Length: 309
Image 1 (tube, rainbow, N blue to C red):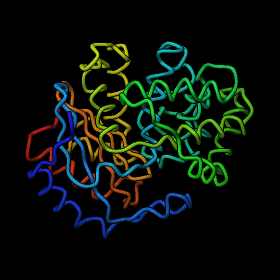
Image 2: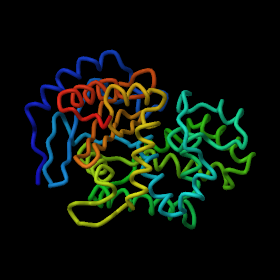
Image 3: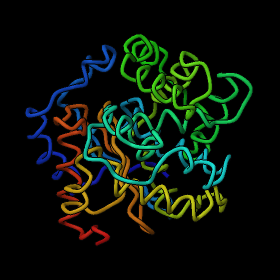
Image 4: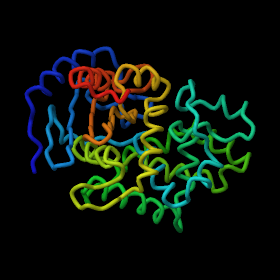
């Protein structure tokens, strides 16, 4: 079923687009710095196959930190809860997503949660497979199944750009390696992690992944339980408590849906039991979230009473 442009959504996008002027693209990753800051698009995928949209939903962007919640689901299926949460915590943090501060003060020095960079690196470290390529292909196959698109790939240019500038992530890895939380070669892990963050898709594919989480891991189209119910629920809880970096509390109050953002300007939303949302708006606020994307979700949540609280 094709994704239909929706008049009400178009009005909301037009309203939210005014806020793009207050944001800034993520130019600290050179390949992301070339995005048009005034882009804004949204797709909403319903479990009955219906899809509504506004803006240029075919525009591709990289997942960045949105991949963290997908890799967490994948690793929980691979390794089980006790293994994963012995190595990464479950608590929100008020620190920026790339901070090393809490690692130095906690004992044992495990990351507070899987949505900050330190925690996401530990999660990616847990992906099973022989070598970087096999591990990456396993994760990519999982993402393709959720998005129902076997053509999804990663952007080599963005991956290389991130690999070349991943000094902070390398520092986090070496700290974690010192404390035996990470055991593999740091450069190999950074290679795998930057490829994971550079997986590329459009709003429609992202909305479909959001719908899988919204439906507790079930793909309504195929009838397959892609993610076990308890794992999908764990992921949605992390999206509520930690998904929007250190703006997650404010986001929960104002919008109140499980969501995960990325510094490319993507936001994936999962309205429990109802639908998935995919947004792209590359102009970011100071926390690293899409400034117009958050405004758009705020308008949606207010107009249609989407908050789960």
